[in-house]
Length: 123
Image: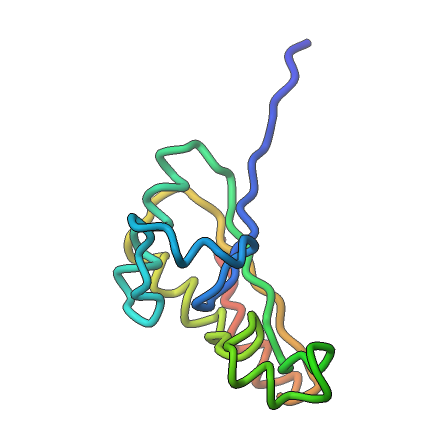
C-alpha cells in the first residue's frame, strides 16, 4: 500500500505572514491588496502540488502588545489589516484549476443565513 502526502497552505490575507519579518525580503511582493497577489499565490501552490489552501477569518485587532490596540495599529501587527477571506479565495478561484480553497467564518458579527451564502455548494 502506498501512502500519500497531502499538502495544505495556511495563509493570512494580510500584509504580514506567519513570518513577520518576511516583508523586508527584497523579492517579497507587498501588493497584498491586489487580486493578482492572491492569484499568483494560488498558481504557485498548484505548481507545488498543494491540495488546498486555507485562510482563517481575522475578527479582531490584538491588544496584547503594549497597553491596548494603539501600538498594534501604530506598528501594523498581523491583525491590523486582515482582508475578508471569502473575497480572497474567490479571487484565487478564477486563476486556479485544481486546488481546494477553504476559509473560516464567524457568526459573531454576521447572521448565519448571510454566512451560508458565502459557502456555495459544488457538486
